Length: 517
Image (cartoon, rainbow, N blue to C red):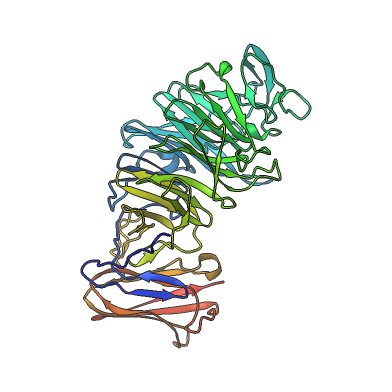
């Protein structure tokens, strides 16, 4: 099993473990950069060398620098409605698939906006519209035969969930658009035809019947294998396309004309060495063994489907099963260890999947990842594993012996990237207002100017003591205390104003938290 994060010396002071209703915290100064990440919910990330890019904001970090980079002219993200749904990297090249939430009569849906790309490491950016069909684009030719298709003209339901890049060729998995390909760096695009759900092969020498609700029509509304979600170009040039209806494998999709691409389609069947689920969320290749790993979710096509991850070492002839029942969002590799980020936590295997352990709650000096956090994404730079969660980014250079946690930051000194003239303060609480049911905990950031004893207490409107949070001897620096909304007797505190008082050497800091639940 993994060992818990070790207690260690930080700035030559002894760190003290404090438990707050189950939240264990290591006390110590924290960094407070002016330029940190833009969102604590980090849904996707990709790395190349020592460089990391993350979404949904388009942020870059090089060599674990405390300051993060924000592109100034990626307007669709910086000044527009776009969020980063996917990323693909090469030397000095970044592709970011962009989407947004669109309001419709049936509720909010995810929509495709297009792509930003840069060829100079992220200084300058170009924009490409989402490669939707034209209204009259209602036929396609495959293997010399003309077929009918439903034109996908709307941005709604066609966001770029994953991108794969190989020189001038880009593949993008865009849900209703399916799989699209450009062989000239995004100047022109083709929709790539995938096999019908009921078919295990697609080849240009045969003719096919597509599931068009009674018509022989290529129509993603009635065929889950046409709904693109994941794509990978492996080291051998094989293209893997994951859909809501299985995995599609092609040995010529990288270079063949669009009307001649061959596919082998696999879905959940009665075998014990097939897929676990038909909805393929992400596909990764092990950097050393070359094995293909992918996350499986149920697609609703078979009662046999379940959550988990699978591995194949024989191009899909057989699959090994791991973490069955766990909803896994991403897979990563670092120092010979395999990591899986899921709704229920972070898992790791140091023996190529034979045994798995759940990583204990991630902690770093003065902060931690909430126990309720969802683990979304993984990436590996030259010397570091990065983990994106709903509660910030955790990173480690040593397989979890120690962790560093990065979140949205507003320095106490006042200046921040959103407001250069922001005033200096000695403390603030976030989120504020605070809902224990929604947020689980509130963090109080404060400054210690002189070394000595520090005490933090919470009071109600009548100045009756609710709880003492922290008490100890601290060195100068920025700290955080946490509160989960309960009193000393572990009872939920009633709605209303809660006042905090921080007594530090030569200074008393007071503030207010509005508790609403």
